[in-house]
Structures are given as C-alpha cells and as structure tokens.
Amino acid sequence: MKHKTRLAIAVALVTASAAATAQMGDMKGMDMPMKDMPMKQLPAADQVHKATGTVNKIDHAKGVVTFAHGPVASMGWPAMTMGFRVKDAKLLDGLAVGRQVEFDFVKEGSAYVVTAVR
Ligand SMILES: [Cu+2]
Image (cartoon, rainbow, N blue to C red):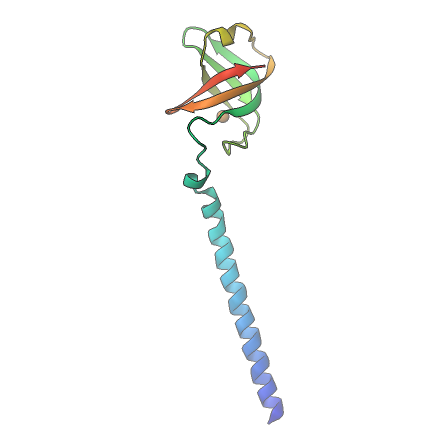
C-alpha cells in the first residue's frame, strides 16, 4: 500500500516536471520573436550610430557613398554593403574606393545619412 502511494507521487512529480519543462520550452520559443520585436529596439530618431566600413562606391552626383560596413549593434544590423547619403557633400572629398573608415550616421526618415567620417 505504501509502495503504491510512493509510486503515484513519483509519477505525479515526473508528470508535473515534464509539463513544466514543456512550458518552459514554449516560453523559450516565444522569447525569440519578442527579442526581435522592432518596437523595443527602434533607436531614437536622432541617435548617432557608429560603424566601420570600406568605401565601395562614391556617387558624387547623388551624394551617396556605398560602404561594406561591419555589424552595427545600435541598429541591430549585421555586416552588409549599402548606400548612405552624406549630410554634406564635402564628406565625400576625403573618401576613395577601398579606403577603410569609421563613420557616424543618423536615420533621417527612411534614409541613412552619414554625418562624419574618420
Ligand atoms: Cu547596412
């Protein structure tokens, strides 16, 4: 009799623990999309982002420089190649294709605008 009770408790415990594990698994699954939710990660509009990159292309007419840039943690960006507008056309003067630079940029509407190059 005592044996049976113990067994029942053991089974109940295992079941409860399995349920808890399953639940944690579910929560873990939910954790990912929550972390990726853009609303929480959206940087402030006037935030200055810093990046390093190699100049890939310079378009003086459009005032656009294309960088192969490294990851930008403040934007949640991986490394990629993309075009940036420049705040001031003079910023393009010191650039040359292949040159490695550090640069600052801000988000202006849907565009990314370089504000400084070092
Ligand atoms: Cu990018």
